[in-house]
Image (cartoon, rainbow, N blue to C red; front, side, top):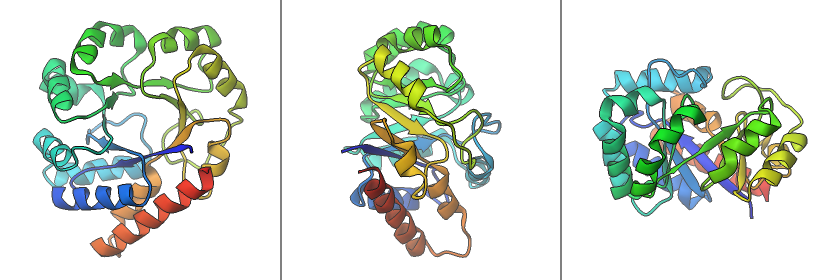
Length: 244
């Protein structure tokens, strides 16, 4: 069965609700969860997740909130997704030590190029935390092979050139074939995944990553918290059914 990785921006409106929502999504069939680290300049994120990050920061998000939420969800398959600056501010070694102690399985850092990531590989290994590798449809074949030579957990294949949440589509079968020839690590497709696009996005892949569709629910001020949990759970079930 193909896997579903969800994404949530924490502390909207508070840490307790993030935990409740995450648990409901896991119960609905989500396999893994990325907890986003709010940042003021999220270059790879579309309008929805960028807006959520700003709201979380206005709600007073600090890194200790991420630790608190992760501790409450310990035992689930959790990952942290964020830009390099917040991790550098905290200290990479400290961040990875905390992640490892909390059972966080991986970090996703979209603005950390492979050339720079190599220097941190021993710290990731020591903490038993994977660093997820990103591949785009425009990544050259030779570079794909180099990036993926030690890929762990899963490979994040970006569905199109652009930012998260956009209603775009590209034929991924060519790049999927190249990625699968280069690595035995599972390949998950992200960007623009929801109940309507999941089946097509999952074609030839091992799973999908859905973020904006959940964050839109999180941001809808017309919904009560219970309604948000219900809608996010329904979206989770629908995506899982679509990807088979």
